[in-house]
Length: 94
Image 1 (cartoon, rainbow, N blue to C red):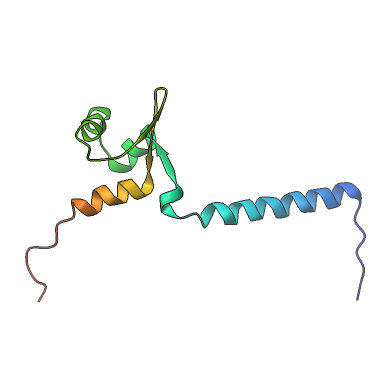
Image 2 (tube, one colour):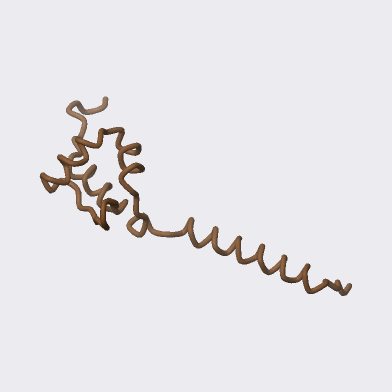
């Protein structure tokens, strides 16, 4: 077995990289309901205007959180909105 000697700086850099990898793995393994979208991301994801998003909020079609002027949506609420408005195909596949 061969021993490898690292300087303190090299060791700290290695630990930093391990922490970055751990953080990336943790972020990618989050459940969709744990992810929040801001209004700009929501508009882009749904390909809608600000006015349409406002109408959906006013009509209670989508739940949201508001902190000051910033609006956030849970990804699980977006999925619920899409599931509630899901229409199955009218014709049966042959």
